[in-house]
Image 1 (cartoon, rainbow, N blue to C red):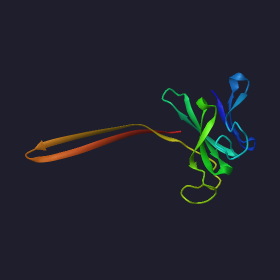
Image 2: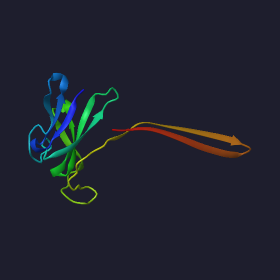
Image 3: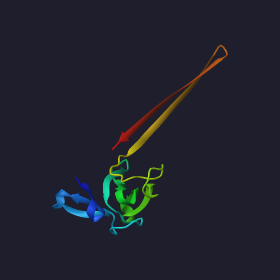
Image 4: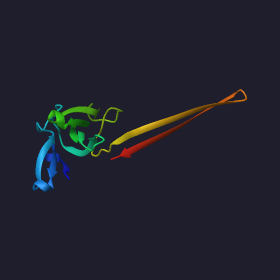
Length: 136
């Protein structure tokens, strides 16, 4: 097990493992305070993007004072890209005003079944769609 900590005043996200005596490593904000892609300014929330096998694909970080959400990938040494916000403080559709939490909704599978029946020259078509989703 590991804990993710939005280390707000140190402008980074830490991954801490109790099995290793609480040792922590920086997984986002590896270049400290700032507004560049690999920097954070007062991160507040963290969510995980995971593969089907449970491995971490990316950390989604609420970058509070840069008014954006950053997607940081461990495979690329903490490289981050802006996936929401990033257009300054405000109330427009592409802006945030001090965001502080994040939740990830991930659609895992969608199945559609369509059947067509013809009876006495009347054609009937019906579709059933089932979606499974997980919110973390």
